[in-house]
Length: 144
Length: 144
DNA sequence: AAATCAATTTAGCCTTGACTAACTTTAAAA
DNA sequence: TTTTAAAGTTAGTCAAGGCTAAATTGATTT
Ligand SMILES: [Mn+2]
Ligand SMILES: [Mn+2]
Ligand SMILES: [Mn+2]
Ligand SMILES: [Mn+2]
Image (cartoon, rainbow over all chains, first blue to last red):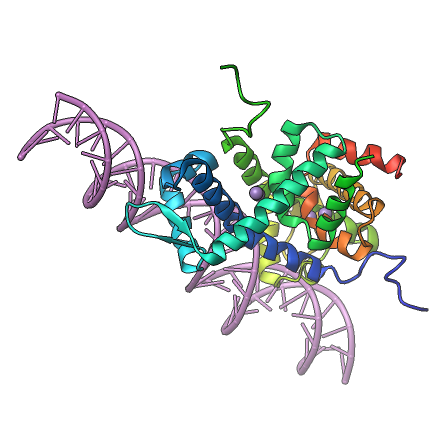
């Protein structure tokens, strides 16, 4: 009797969750490159101690994460020196900052309290597809 | 010169990220109880093999997760038998299902393709606060 | 120039959430 | 009723992302 994708929920949810796990694997990387970019812009350089303070984690955790980011080609660093974004890191940071801003602005535009929006956007941003982001952006122009 | 919270972005982002980490710690639990509830409703019982198929993970992974859910009081299970929600699990499942539905419906209502909305809602739902959820729900009544 | 302090690194530990491979139990077929 | 297939369990491994405690390095004071 015809396909059921329109009426019933998808039977095969596995790809939905596979994509979810993919997004999770990228979250910390995305937040770090964005924050490193912010620090360079705001303070001239990105030091571990500032990352630790802003993320609310220990210096040891930052160190681990930076090593992973370096391994994956997003940053460069030398012992006891500050952290730099590679081209790849810069590109990702720019994309994530823009996305974050759109999500935040969209939430505020529909009536979410800015304080609350700041909390929610930090998580939501990583799960918003290009398509959904475009819808958010489109709604921003006409806030009614 | 006066406090800067209104004009500038929050200096202290640490609590934003602490809440984000909290949300992450709850995600798998939330998706599992919701799915277990779905399976009981749709098929009469929740078997590991069905959970593994729907989440796209191995039976061993399901087994691990169910043990954790049991430890945390969300489900009961006996070896080689099906899985049941406790009161606590049922309550959480109900809340998560409702939230998921509102997020999905909201996305569709603003013009996101249903297929895309299904993907995005699965991640977004876990990062939507009560306040933001209320705004989403309010917008649903008047979709213009 | 030493001493001190702050920042960073290292080592070792933990939980979550994934996997494979091998084993056991239950259910279905023959 | 035996055999076989499916489902579930167990054991062992891994990476991510947290932690603490201790060691090291670099920067600032004295
Ligand atoms: Mn962000
Ligand atoms: Mn974020
Ligand atoms: Mn859900
Ligand atoms: Mn979900």
